[in-house]
Image (cartoon, rainbow, N blue to C red; front, side, top):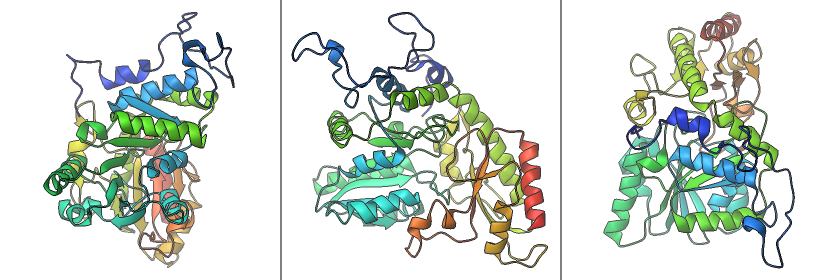
Length: 411
């Protein structure tokens, strides 16, 4: 997990330079965007430098794939048109008769795809397990049909933290005992970003992102990317990338490449601001629960704080990301229910914009049960209707704390 200065440049340095090497032709410090659909070939069956058609290959996309693979410590990056398209491609690795063990707190779109597209198609069946509860839960969930073990850490929206190294080791131990090939461990690293956490270095097989979020960082593009060091997995994902056709355009790739160059400094500010917001919420009597991995003590202490401190690090120190969730207490100035207060809070902030998505430089606030996680309503993964999710941006921390305070006071 820790950068070795004797072996390679530090993460912050790589974030600036990975995939952003000066243009080979002109030396341009900002490499050009290859806004092309096709390429001239040197002869029949002789594409120049391997470039045939931009669904299959594009130089701008190749830079992005190389950059994210480098930052995640993997050999292969495969970019898709969205995080959801990345989810769909990875899910294809589980065939009919095989199972996907999934963490029981995931983005609503992931649940929607697995339950309303993947399962009806007769492909791998998903089973939802509280993998953050510890190794026993995972051990009991694994069967001879398990092909993928899939989780978010921290999770969306409850910010559960799963021990990636322990989970990956257990999957391999169980496979060794049974004499079977181990399932692939898949980690959605969207909430942490590679600036804080690199699952491949902790034993995972595939890591993926909605690059729309922290990797891009400016809420101006939609894109997804998967990274692996497994050559066979990479070959299959590249085939699916081309065959399914859900590839990002070159300008979207450029926007994420540009975002990566400030990832390290942005994440430092996101983490500091989120900690300030979480601590202020934790001090309020009208807040029933705060979910933030950086809260290690008090009545809102995160149950996996020690695991988070071990596997989420920035510059050698624990860092816990920019996402905070909380439940307001019932009552307040107007004697409302918790759910009524949650709606009032979301609609009263000035700096926190009411909107879906996360990971941009601006702060966002939302009600998952009515917005990003409507797909899990009436399922075992249903979200408390009073839960408020914050994506804490890079504004001045004091202004963000004051904005939430006035919204809570008025609710």
